[in-house]
Length: 419
Ligand code: HEC
Ligand code: HEC
Ligand code: HEC
Ligand code: HEC
Image 1: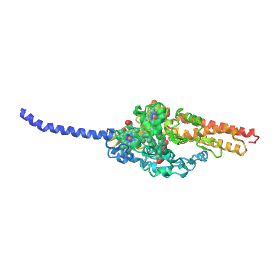
Image 2: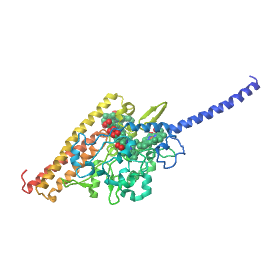
Image 3: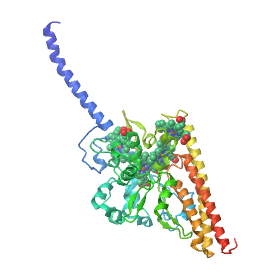
């Protein structure tokens, strides 16, 4: 080749190579931003409207929208009639539905039975991306506002801002109750490893909590530890009761969906798994692979959720889950009726004129039995997240309920009543 020909070739190929390179970088970056959540900088800081994140992450938006398919809403009471008796005198006795998809939170909280709205504005704390903003706007008054005062301001269900930083799409914690609880444990929330963040973003809401008097602030009762026993010990020490059972006379506390606490210490958690490993598995959408943003039962997609670790086949896995859940359900029913027994014995003792002082021990045991039973009954997953601890909690519930019945009867005998 003559130098002239080389020159001509270079004149044609160099610009072409530059064009290809620039286009390549552009496409790679776009792909990168879309899939890896690289810096985008154009989503407004504090953007509560998830639809405004959609142009930057269209595939994630599509995945998020599929939560609308998760729309069944059965009652918690179905097949568990004892719950109505144990919740007597409290809002939950009126209505208690199973959860459904994240996009339904506003619709569901608005449709809630009026008996449950007494908890006030705090009801929406785990339902909307707008909550941290509203907490800032109203300060401590937020927790004291009524449900009707706040509900008109809330339009966005759970969304991107709850778990992501708009500038970088990195996982972040948005709920003060979790941040405060972790800080009380001595954690530096800026130094939490990603794998743990993949659990903690869920622990902003999938936990038990209470409205701490006197300001009614949403508070995670973990200062003595995160097992059912540790949490009850915390309430006992604080002398906290949420309501008094009308028939038994016992001061009671109500656990809520303790998925995170139950998961802690399980086989899967100690093996290093996070909630996202099973509930947000990598999934192929078109030619892209993303963390699924359809939060649902992993049994709907076992091939994605379980079989990258477990090679025993989907049928085996399905059977294992069902076996665990059936055992838990049967033991839970036994515990449920035992707690009803404890309530009935206390009621009979009161009707026979036994005074409070003599029923102290029976009431303490009833409080304990009901706590451990309810802790299992309201935690989603029916024991799968930690089968051994769940069955152990139910064993405590059954034992305490029987001891309570015995103690009530003894108190009745002591005042000369025939049994
Ligand atoms: C801002 C609070 C919040 C966060 C954060 C959150 N959830 Fe939820 N989640 C809820 C609420 C509230 C519901 C019930 C919605 C309803 O029924 O209206 C729910 C429902 C669900 C359901 C559906 C249950 C069913 O029976 O269909 C699953 C599964 C779930 N969440 C898993 C997760 C996982 C996994 C994470 C973390 C990656 C997470 N959630 C983060 C509040 C939250
Ligand atoms: C309940 C929490 C939660 C919500 C709500 C949520 N995400 Fe995610 N998102 C996650 C988790 C967990 C991951 C996995 C992150 C990791 O492994 O580093 C993730 C990953 C991502 C990624 C990184 C790429 C990937 O697929 O792993 C992007 C981008 C993303 N989400 C965008 C969004 C957008 C857009 C929305 C709103 C439409 C949204 N997310 C809503 C929890 C959430
Ligand atoms: C090892 C896999 C695995 C991990 C890790 C895991 N889960 Fe689950 N989860 C399941 C299975 C299996 C079920 C039962 C689904 C069913 O009964 O259909 C379930 C049920 C649930 C449900 C109820 C969904 C429904 O449709 O009934 C929620 C909510 C939930 N998990 C949240 C969480 C949270 C929050 C974490 C982390 C603290 C977590 N899970 C960790 C496997 C897992
Ligand atoms: C990231 C890997 C991983 C994923 C995903 C995973 N598991 Fe596991 N699983 C493990 C490990 C590790 C153990 C501990 C025992 C072992 O080494 O096999 C385990 C143990 C179990 C056990 C034994 C019971 C127990 O609690 O000790 C069952 C049942 C099980 N897994 C079911 C499931 C189901 C169902 C899913 C999907 C919803 C799932 N696993 C998803 C890693 C995983």
